[in-house]
Length: 189
Image 1 (cartoon, rainbow, N blue to C red):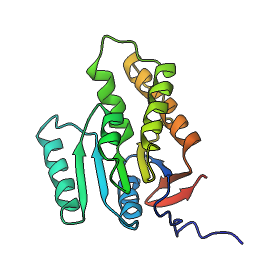
Image 2: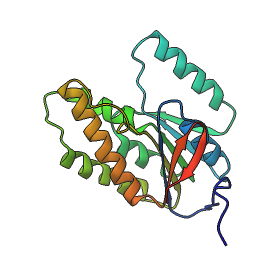
Image 3: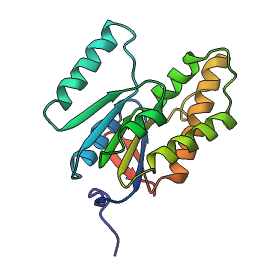
């Protein structure tokens, strides 16, 4: 008997790591929030996007308003993802949105350090360890950047490579992986 991919499995008070990827505006965040809201217990939302300009500030305000009254505890943390995961240990469900912005922030937090794929893998494993530090569901949202053209400059290529390494590491260690296409979830594992 096969399971219906449109009906996500229920995970209550156990350790579960869900990785959701897809292209820009593919429905990743909406799907992740629906999955999180379907689970019982206190929920935390780790937002990694810093306010960089007026347009981004307006977007963040819309997201905050959409979450208001839905029982979310929001923690805005652009760089220290392990610290944010440890700070939300009492939540039954934690949504991290999004991994690609977190990596962007890491690159700009220390532009002098040569962050490479080996470093990214170790850092991602640290994040996974923090996510699995207690019985809860942790949902990671990330963009799939590897389906486009090769970026034109070295920094953009390095960013793409770091995101790719992080995504591969998260997906390999996740209990469940979903790829979003045009608002529809495709179960990868």
